[in-house]
Length: 152
Image (tube, rainbow, N blue to C red; front, side, top):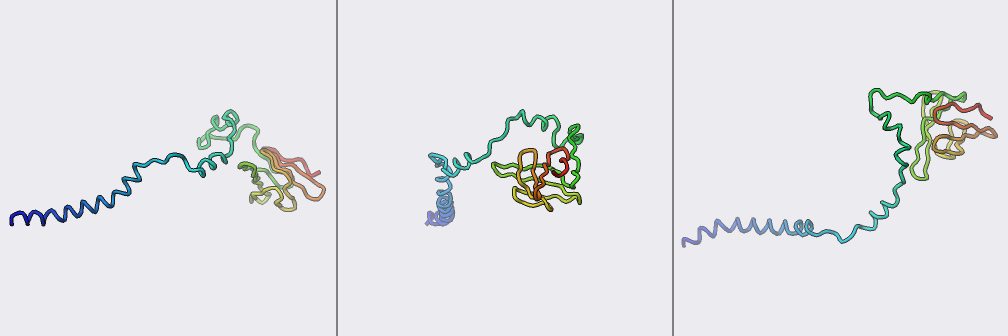
């Protein structure tokens, strides 16, 4: 009869240990198994990334860090408003997709793609540093950092 009280005390401990073993078994199996190869979706996503330009094309970024308190525009790089009231603020290029950010005379900005309209003008072409706009038989070219010539 002396053995009976110790087996009653050991029963809950054995039960808890068994439950922990059952709960931890799937995790231990998952943690120790390594995949034989990377999934095909990851390989395809890696191939689809755009190619970045060489670092020497980004020299101005290192010379004038983005968050430096004394950062100023490069001399002569200040954009001026066009006689038509439109100014190219920048171009966003991701792969083959291009969007231009154009500032209007009233201070609002428009993010446009080829074929979109800004006022009476239709965006005909977007390159890395300029946008060609057309209205009827007139065309203008907005270039980054300078005002366009008057409409032709």
